[in-house]
Structures are given as C-alpha cells and as structure tokens.
Image (cartoon, rainbow, N blue to C red; front, top):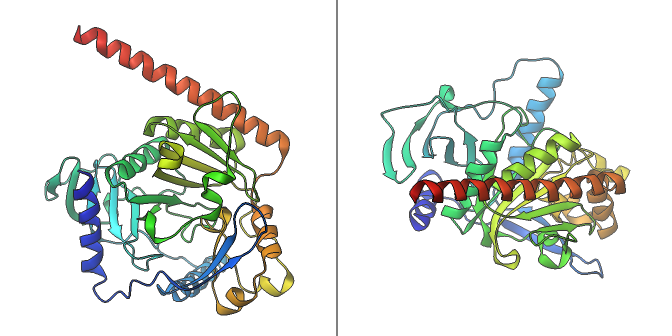
Length: 342
C-alpha cells in the first residue's frame, strides 16, 4: 500500500505536469541566527509568484463585494482516499510532486470510481463531491494522518483563514515529498520534551509549536481540543519523523495573519503561511528575497505566533490531558475487542 499510493500520486503529477522543470527553489540563502539553527529564504522556481498575483486580484475583488466562485471547487481526476479525501496534483505546485488535498462529503458514493487499491479509488471529482467549508474537523486530521502512514515519503501541511491560507474559504491541505525541502524550526534540536510526558514536545525557539507523537486519532483529538481551547487559527503539519519516533502532528497556533514587518516590506503583501512560521520564507518577489534580514524574519515569525506564557501553559496542559484521555479510550477499546475475541 505504501508504495502504491506514493507511486500513484507521483504518476498523476507527471501526467498533469509533463513539462514541469522540477525546480522547487530557483534561489535559496540562509539567514544566519548564530543559534541552534539557521533560517532560510527561497525564491520559487514553480510559478508561485504568478499564482500569488492572481490570488491578490481575487482578494481585492472580494473586498469590493464582488461575487467570486470558490477557487478550489473545480473538477479534476483524483485519487479518492478512504472515500473522504480527494488527492489531486496541485495546479500551481509549491514543489515537485506537490498534491492538493480536499475533503469529500461523507455522503458521496459514486460507482464510476475505479478501485485501484485498498481504500483507494480513482475517478473524476466534481464540485458536488467536495465538502466546501472553511474549518477543519477531527475526520480531516485522522484521514491525513493515515495518508502519511501509507505514503511515508510525503508530509502534509495545512493553513486556514487567519493562518496564511491562499484560499481560506475552502478547507484543504498540501502533501509533498519530505525530501523536497526542510523546515528549519521543525528540527529536533528546536524542541524540548514536555515534562511528565513521553510523546509531547514544545518549540519556543522564535515560533511556538506543540508536537505530538501518536496514532492518527490521538493527533486529531489534540488538534481539535487545542482549537476548542484557544479559539485561534493554526497551521498544521503531519508526517513520519524518525527523530521523534514515528507519526507526528505539529500544531502552531496563530495570533496574527499578516506579520509585523518594516515599512519597506509591507508592500510585498506577504502572506505568511505554514512555511514561514517554521523558519522557511517563500519570497513573493525578488526584492524580498534579496533584502530580508534575520532580525526581520525573526520579528515576523514571532509576531504571528503565540507567546503569551499563560496561554502556552494552558495549551500544554490541555495537550497532555488530551493525549492521556485518548490513550485511555484506545486502551478500553483494545481490551473490549480482546474480550470479544476470547
């Protein structure tokens, strides 16, 4: 299953983008911190600047009160995963083999979808199949966690309204090969294990992130619980990471959508998403790429992430309680199943 899902995703990408130059980073440079890790800024080779200009024009139309169709409610040939997620080559990729993930309404059943593996079908996803809503739910996180277990060379990132999503009106996520890039502030050296736990880590280095290792259901319960507690937008990351011992989910609560930056950078319309809060800066234009300094990047990331000590303590306490609750629930389920078998 692992090989077949990853191979099918890559094959679909090759078919959709046969002339793709496969250059994720046209230019890249380090922002030296003098600390545990250096940050990084890059200039994309994947036509992202053109994409951002189109999105800015659409956002302006919305601000004028004009009716604009949802940008993600388009038809496309897709892999249908667990009948809950449409996996499609992204129209304008971040990196080579970048896939767009869109939830499907649970009521969808289409006999024209062709089975291509266990819990995996292929077919034409149309607007009426899609679950178009702005926020995430428990099932979204569970199913994306299973995706990275089945395609272990991929990772998932997610943003929303208030946390840098290019299309905030339609919940979605992105999957791309882990070897395409590296998030500086995701590295193990940036995290400290939360006292009294064996599977929760916290990153207070420039950003603020809570990392949980566990099964898909535990990660989903923590994400949903933290959102209910903090009532803040967030960025999400899901992947298999051997440095942390397996499947992890990283939750980054956001206090601002746009960063606080020097006046000279404000005209860049810097949409600050899932990359930037973990120390990877996608330059929207060459001026930003050439001029960004470490202290400006630090200020920008620090300004959008959660640094209130009391709220941090509340979030960490909640994460610990949610993990314990999840463990107890799954222990009871396992014991019950064993009793039935006996």
